[in-house]
Length: 276
Image 1 (tube, helix red, strand yellow):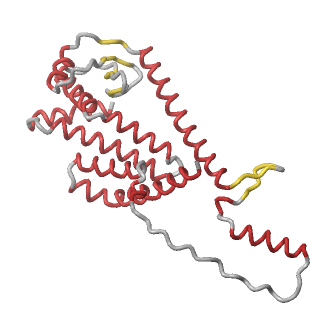
Image 2 (cartoon, one colour; image 1 turned 90 degrees about the horizontal axis):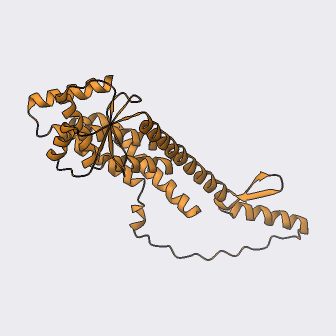
Image 3 (cartoon, one colour; image 1 turned 30 degrees about the horizontal axis):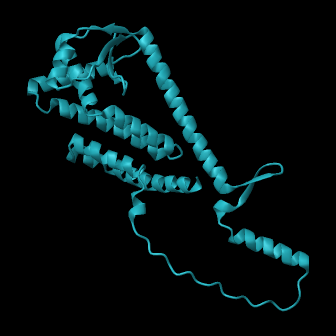
């Protein structure tokens, strides 16, 4: 298990460095790169914290050098002195991850085991909090939402995007803006407010484009990577930037084939709903 923890730490360092570089270059890339490319670059940083690609690099092992025989010092040492010297030498030559630390009276464990247990506990706690909060949110939404059936605009947009999967439409008082929820059982949740039909079409285009691009899966992957690297502050920044780039790439995909007038209406609709 400690080998896995070492791999995670190495990936965290590599991904953290790449994330820091992207954050420094963000003012430039935001102007020079299209939204889709910005999204792809952040996903590369995400994968660098997930896949140990560095292990594919061949490493040439050095020949083992035999220890140099040491001459015995003149004079005779007492057994107690020899024992102390041996113990000190053993402690100094032991790798730090294999040294023992006292965690309770009369109980010791290796530092490597302590760090590994701490990492596993943090990851499990992070995932447990997120999953339980998500399930409670879904249950609350299903309890308080109203199911909308036979919605002509939603069906028309699905045909336009060539989506055949059944996607439930709900209206919820607990949200302020439309959202797509559910990876296995997708649903579009709308806030309890009057939305004109022409704006509603723009909303469905946005949410269904998220569904078609599998953005929910990528966001859950980013969350999982964040959980594994919970000890790295840059992992949280990486996840936030992926979410931001995801929205920008989705907007670009939706408006790509629109006329200038439709594009203007789309952006006005998204901004108005985001501000409410």
